[in-house]
Amino acid sequence: MSMPTALFLAATMATLLAAAPAAQGAGRYVEVEYPPSSAAGELQVGVTYTLWIPEGVPHLRCIVVHQHGAGRNAASHGATAAYDLHWQALAKKWDCALLGPTYHVLNDAIDTTPGGAQLWFDPGMGSDKAFLRALGDLASRADHAELSAVPWVLWGHSGGGIWSDVMADLHPDRVVAMFLRSGAAAMFRNRVFPQPQVPAAAYTIPTIANAGVKERKTDGSVGPWEGSKTIFEEYRAKGGLISFAPDPRTGHECGDSRYLAIPFFDAVMAMRLPAKGSRDQTLRPVDTSKAWLAPLMGDTAQPAAAYKGKPNEAVWLPNEAVAKAWMEYVKTGTVGDTTPPPAPSHVRISPSAGEGTEIAWDAAVDFESGIGGFVILRDGQELVKLPEKPSANTYGRRLFQEMSYHDTPEPPVAEMRYVDRTASAGQKHRYAVITINSTGLRSKAATQ
Image 1 (cartoon, rainbow, N blue to C red):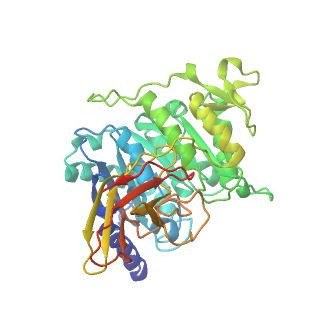
Image 2 (tube, rainbow, N blue to C red; image 1 turned 180 degrees about the horizontal axis):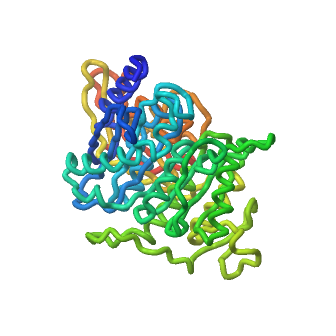
Image 3 (cartoon, one colour; image 1 turned 90 degrees about the vertical axis):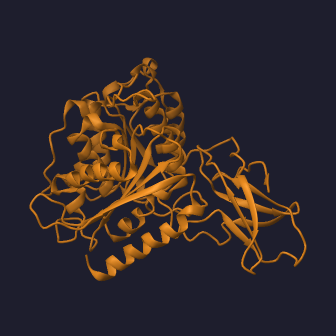
């Protein structure tokens, strides 16, 4: 790794680790890191695997993998994936761990240039071996031996989508579901990219291929849109359980795709994960009787039994709830929410080293919409709304953990704390905290 890249990644991780205790929900982080290897068949770029484990879970049921894309910016932002409160909420609901791998690429090349991204997003070049090794090492460090055997939920952006696609071909019996944002192995068929034969078991993995309409090529070349559409068409022709979800607002950025990905994963995990407490890791088959279908590039789905078109050319959706989310998403690029978030808890007030009064709190995530921010009240009046500064980007609905291009929190990860530097000296104030979800709905106030 070059020194500037190494220093940047080290600084990013140090910032994240320093902020984590106050910023995150209850749980712990475990990390392993491997240097690049020069051995044939081994991973030629370094990698860090950061795993979040929810508190109070004696036996983990699966791992949710949030895999970043190609390039240095994607790799540095991948370092925050395991710290994302919304994705942690999905993992926690199902007693799963959340894994954020970060590959230490040296440049923005998407080929086998030394330090380039194809060295990892082609699992055959060593990232498959490194991933399996990491699961074993993390299992040992976390004292959760089951991590080596539990199934995987795979989310991947760009190169991460390619990686997830190929990993599902290599390990179809381990994959609960996939969400491929702007990335599928079909993108690289016109290049030297050895792709494994798709096994029959891969067609039984519920999958959403998701791409932004602004990615669509007009020159006949193949990019993320074309690759996503290709895997959809090929899988559906074989009866594969796959959807194509065009995002009408975006290009290659992830936008608000999490508001479709999370309910999709939630529905499929309910169908496929082994029973809670079971030591048998065999995935259950999907109950296809609940499926809905929709025409490709259409925006209206209906129960499969009522669908009049050709089923093997139709968008497949696992149930009514996901179908409704999909219909809204392909029309608007997001999914709304009509229920307010849970109220914060454990509001704590303390002096802040002569700077004023510190307010700290905990907050459960609104499962549908995440945490958009907080309002701090002092003596019943609004003191501040967090985040305070205008958003630095417009990649999607604003979140308390500012959203990056890559569906990860912008570093440094926001903390659930605020220092009131305007409090009157010697005067006691009463504080309260309100959660706002990403659609703007407010919770009840939690007081100290």
